[in-house]
Image 1 (cartoon, rainbow, N blue to C red):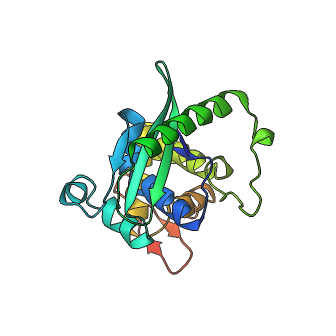
Image 2: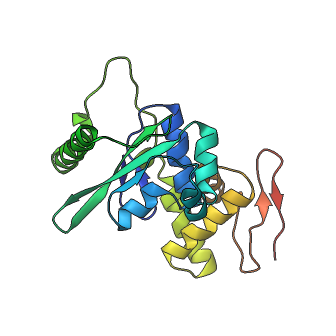
Image 3: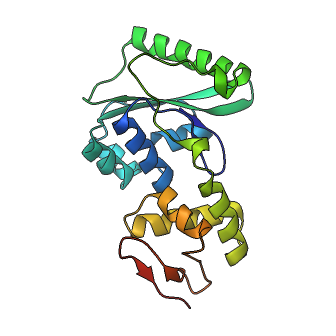
Length: 207
């Protein structure tokens, strides 16, 4: 489940694979879940279909490699108010039948009510299933976006794009790059990328 925010927030994921695909969507800034934030319901019964590969050329193959073949992204919306997106994943290709789609839409309505009414302490705990840490538990992405915005004199939206581009180019997770920016191990310059030391053997030169 993702909240509409800049940057986008994942507030709950049900398992490791889902968390990984949500992280891919966050880092790459593309995929059905991203499109559903600005559009409507996204039903993708097979990510290997040609139209999916053309529409999401980076995200689709990466999601398939992670173990996901079908995605259904349902906007969480009440009237003109958009709260976020509920993402449903399937390991095998296949569409939702009429009954499954009806149930999914009811679940999205329930999620809207919970987001409007519940506090963090109200989130139910499912026996045997632990929510993946994500979203609001990683505020460094917000902090790094603000810092890069100041460093480059860009809007927050463009600063986030630069962070995502760097993370993708260096095959790193967005949150890890953000931690380096917040810790001042990485600084973005107008020449393009940052200077400073980085973990795991990564280095980048300044202007």
